[in-house]
Image (cartoon, rainbow, N blue to C red; front, side, top):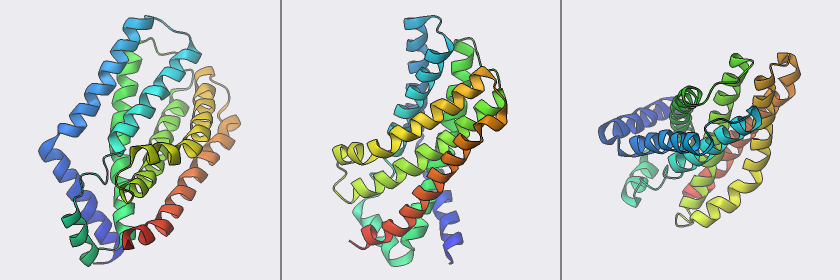
Length: 219
């Protein structure tokens, strides 16, 4: 099989395994919904700045819980089996695609639950939806890369936190700026720079993953 076919097969495998168990995705959904409910009980009503900040805090921790297990569930026997059959680039790319799909699903559910629980102050819903989708892709690409590195270091959670911090902070700053523009409803062309930065972060992260992961996989 070529790389594209390998990626398609691995993504399908992850979806089938997740659909059979459902424990992990249901646990994350419970976390998202319960966190939104706790925020509502604590604040009742918030201004737009706090509304935006709370949403991205919820999404950040949901993405960590969802993606940190990407390589943990792959035991050594299965990894050895993959090593004999599949390109390492296909493995990391399939993980990024699968985690992106998971994050988009979680983001949509979280946004709907958050909008229903709190009054939705978004001035430009389309731009805010774009920021949510780009944020989901960015979280998926960054945490998948870091999860792959930490998995080869014995699934060290401390290492994952240290490696993600320098990337996730500027990513959150750009996401909050873009979503704040959507909240205030300013013209969309003024948010072009933030959208380009987010796309650039995704491209750079995926490129680094494709270059770095084969060396990690070889070990």
